[in-house]
Length: 288
Image 1: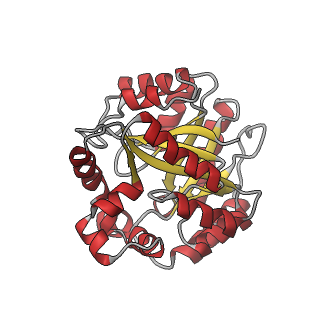
Image 2: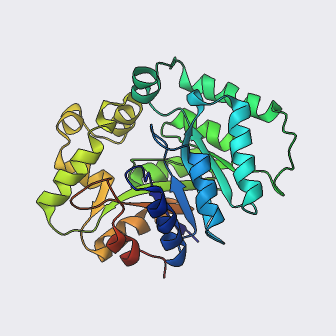
């Protein structure tokens, strides 16, 4: 059975609205809330605050940036939230992109695959002296290409692909085998206005079109340089599921049929993009 969660980076919301958002996600029956990290709030502090005001909602970082944190600090963050919330934490981590890591933060971004492999070694060797969570915190990698997917299957509980298609989900399942978790993010826009949907979708994807990891992944999925540079309707329609609730449900089912164990919807506002989550989409796509 494929479970359903929500992915969002609520940087544009005041703190009290973030807490209300977490409660709303839980009330609607979603299993997990994935919180992104860019240049705003610390994801672990934010997830702990949401966890303190919910009772059963799974909490996940999607993703915590490995270049921005020492491996020991990553373990501390994941273990702390897990212990304080009764084991509800999933640690999604990854290399992010050179735009954020190198250009904005001024950190070295080199050989991400080998860096992440060594990073996982260091996490395994980290000393943690506080009361540990009852069970080890599940780790998932932000993986797109075959080699990163292989690393996810070999070293962690699975993968958390972002900005992908059901065809990519099928490829990821084939690479990782039948047992790995595959938690797929899917952007959704609850609007049947094609012009609005494609304009909003393109505005959201513009940042990612400058990130080499996504560009390379999209090319492996069959998109051309022109698709990516122009943010073509073909690309936007493939990455952003839009239309009626039934149309979006069909896309979510395609991910499930392709091997996803969990699909987290990313509810974009039809007019504001990522500025705030669309409550109408949250309600319409809530698990039955």
